Amino acid sequence: MKIWVLLVLLAAAASAKRFNRCELARTLKAAGMSGFRGVSLANWVCLVNAESSYNTQTINRNSDGSRDYGIFQINNRWWCSNGQFPSKNNCRISCSQLLTDDISADIRCAKTIVTRQGISAWVGWRRRCKNQDLRRYIAGCGV
Image (cartoon, rainbow, N blue to C red; front, side):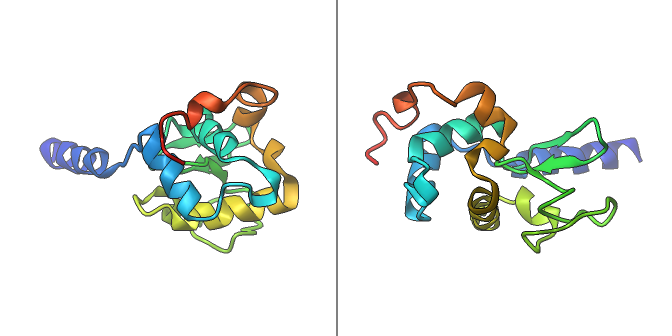
């Protein structure tokens, strides 16, 4: 049984996608994130670096018992539903959709969040990106 659990955990870890900085910048640009609601592409890339280190399967538990999911660290109290925690589910998605290598659901939800609350909704952005020179996040990426 222990070997089976280990194999399941290894398979899950192997399926996690960790974008590199430029790959993410190109993906976000193609999805219309550059300049969306006045937020520069460099701000989005910095935000993702601060929140998840570019990892699609990041989950963090918060002090209130809620969890943040995926590359943008989207909270299940307000934006997605994990079926276990009371949620407003404003993005109308399952939190598990935010843990796949396809980040289109993550992007749609991030657009909803920034439309309603602005980029400052993300603590990681406020702590590590706000009022910083962010050019390095897209430098050399051809975007």
